[in-house]
Length: 490
Image (cartoon, rainbow, N blue to C red; front, side, top):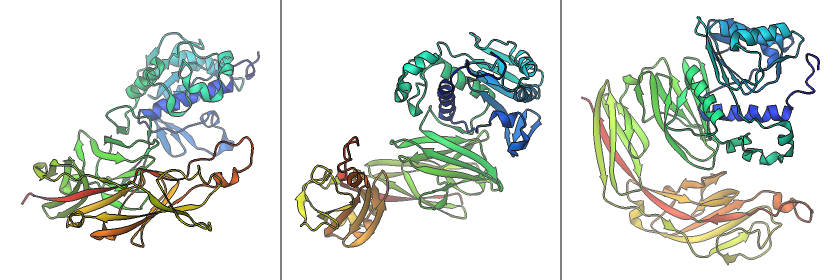
């Protein structure tokens, strides 16, 4: 085999699988990172990507990096290895995973071997033991071994979609087994060499984030890539006054609850399934300059600051006590509110009047569920109609009423008493309808639009079964109550 010949090296599919595994593990640890290709490291001018070196940092296209993770690679160019060696000698941190690159792709083997010896102290491709080297400039090189790496032959036998369950935990998305020793060691190495921009109470693979700085602000985009609601205290390595930007509605508001200590700002966030929020810190605006909550047992709807007064409105559905703590100029005040009434949701059970839009057939009375069983080829909008009775006390001052549609396939449009309440495109299919209700009888209409899969799949062999369509429910009305509290430091 000659230098640069990759024929007998680790297969690209195997490289890809371990590459994805490392990426998913690092992301699950709430570390923001970018991918930098080998040609960029080697300084290929055709790419037009500026690369420079400063004390303990690598500057790539205007971004700086203090830690570089090398995935399991069999080969790398001597020019890229030389750049990595300079990075290490200037105080940078390098973490290599599974396999060291012992072959050069550009014929500069001497540069590659010099890098391996000076940085990792070995030219062995797969050292058995963990390597941890440091230099006098605070540079650090860590090699994390992967015991019993899946061989090319074993990988070829595994179905493509079954790789997530391989015994060595090669990843296909979020099915990665984070209890594997090499993944734990990788995350430990990253935590020893870099500080996460966001810290959570536990490992949450579904949470991803992006951190950027510019214009006197720190921008943190947080997303929940799962079907589950995630609620946690997000500790950011940023200071200044935080605000919350909702990319779905476009609303921007000051973060109602946050706590600052030891250079970190902790903001409690509740991320609904597949939702996102941008937490933006104004680094030129001191958070201590305005009264704010540091803790609340209930969802905070609104805060209003007037001088040294803070008015808070929270939403509660349960009976009990709501405790809140507010602070202003290092002086904290605690308030408690009691709710003696238990607010219970009401299920809208029984038959609904149902019709298919654009179909010349009369409406029928039927229970909630998929219309695919009766009209498997229909793609369009089905309308569900029902009369509901709302007690007057539900609409008293300070009350809110929410409509929860349960499972919807796929898009829901809601009308109450002939007026539009809104359209929900994805889960959770919930919206407030307080202002459209009246005491007594109300007409509720829910239009559900499915995809074209039902129509285009008709009569075509080999296609999957027709997907469920319509309002599957359960549908319920959920009452809530707004409580108000005022803090003062006068």
